Length: 290
Image 1 (cartoon, rainbow, N blue to C red):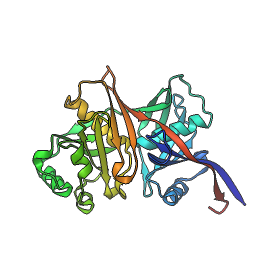
Image 2: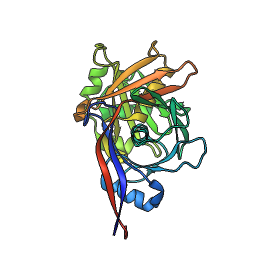
Image 3: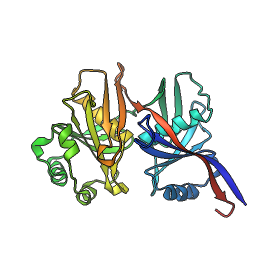
Image 4: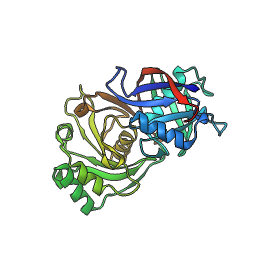
């Protein structure tokens, strides 16, 4: 005998199917053990698979458990937005009219809703300057000069990224990183390296972003929510933009065209979000012996 559990595969940071970053969203998550969740996440072989569970905190609309192919994550950007889109599409009615509240290992995360777009409120960040020796080694791995680094920090937004501003968007797109070196240089507890550069032609986007996480099993993340959150925090901290909203592009080198919207609120908080669209919908077969 088999059970069948509702399932969606949602493309995040795009309104056009197959140009963003997919996440597998599995409903009725309370029916699974942690071991079973990890087994399914390994099978889907996406960067993340999520399980929608009943909220334990009365302020939350649902609880989300997030898994990479290798381990459970306390928080992640694009899985959060994709899962929020999926639960709304599946008929969930939020307790609050204009935002969802997600419960996860990191705590409660507010997800403001803006027409067809979903945003996540970045957790209170923590920044530390990366020491010169590591910067020098990272530049060697990225094949750029130390003088090409215009701003840098180790940024913790629930997920931790070595975050670097390069000369411009063209340099970001032209990078040919040594992933083996990056994996060796990535400290414990850090996802990887996110780089960005500004466009001169603002008809494309404001910035180009790339995120490298070879130690996590993903040489390059197609479109990374937490990586863009780290970039936004670095931009805010260094006053690199005067406007309160901007658009980032990511994934071009992987055949994607991710579009990430960032908003700087007057209270200092940062919102990162965008569109999402369901590309696959159906039911997941769960054998009784699973």
